[in-house]
Image 1 (cartoon, one colour):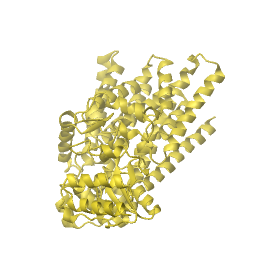
Image 2 (image 1 turned 180 degrees about the vertical axis):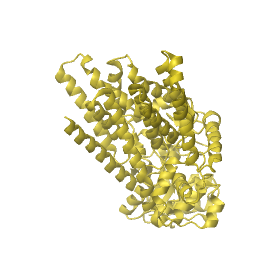
Image 3 (image 1 turned 90 degrees about the vertical axis):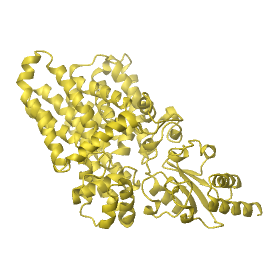
Image 4 (image 1 turned 30 degrees about the vertical axis):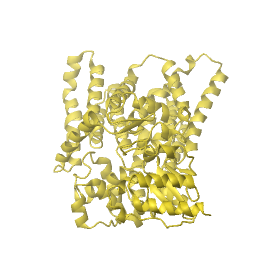
Length: 560
């Protein structure tokens, strides 16, 4: 039995690794990576922790180490001028290194994939310790086939790295109370330190969860147990994390941690972030945002399995507290935040319930069905889950389940990093080459210049260009043989525009194709109606040169 368990374990890990390598190679830079990768590089090369101080540096340092030996082209004067404008720094960083962008991106992402594998291992280990070998493999299966983890585990962001260290911190804390061995408490403290050195959520919510769990565990004979363990608690959860945090910032950069935590608290509790849910925008978010996001972006087969795992035994065992309470607290905390822009913010919740769901292997006998029927039901759900994951490959970020019509219709319900994070620029380039390199009007949601990937285009209400004088716009030829319009779904939905309905007319038109479900492409070559609407928009908003060009093309088409 152990031999077969090991074979399946290796199979799931290798399959996950291969799929992540493919995603890493095929997907272009996402928005946050445009900042995180240069930040990690300059942390390693210059020790400058001011860049992107709104996120702690640990995972970015790992990424920076993997690209630190590459020849990066960025003049010193550009770095000095742009270090306080991190988005401009990232844009210039990648544009200057556009000949090498794929290599930089692949190497920078590689340690993130390794952290994803580490997370899978601890999900397997915790589930195995709780419910047995089959349960461990089942939780690993859920993780390695999860579209949301597959979409984010290779990206140079803080989301999956934090989830990894969050789970390991809780696992070793649980292990301490199970085995009464103080070494596990030390391990927990070490990973708490790494957690808070990775994402500010670690210092905001993780200490609260740890204190609550400790209090619940030592409530019987509280005074004696607290006195006996006070010193080790102090060392593990205050001294060790503090020094790890301090040395992550090389001591002298610690002031940037204080700047960052001040900013992130302001963003999550006061300022907020423009969010989109079910066709509506909000700057303060909705308390039910993540509930809908979870229902839309989780395979239905898993939702059914989760319900089975809950209702087969409503009683929460003592050993399951370390899963259930942190999951509930984390979900509530996320729902109260005003920063609601993606399912990635609740990845720790997913990791915990993937472990919890494996209790099915303990309580399945309570399902009063014929054994053969029961086996058919669970086999069907497992296969459905796997199929949902394989079908969306490699466009995992854009995964939506059947509740909202799948990835084809997901953009009508959620946007931003739920579907469009700038990841398909490389895919657009490949598609255009396949189509014979037509000229394009482009409105791309991303933090790098499309020229970084070799795209030549005329901007179409592209926010990056809206404050640039129109005489600097590159226009397509006067009478193009073939011309397409490409627009990211975030902008199609009106994100960042004062008038969120600015492109409602375009939503009614079926695109020629969708690149990774995040970029819609329309063939406007001989479409007089579509060109007329584009002309009217250019004229309305004062883009005279572009309007004149469209007018000439329309007249020529009418005279054919």
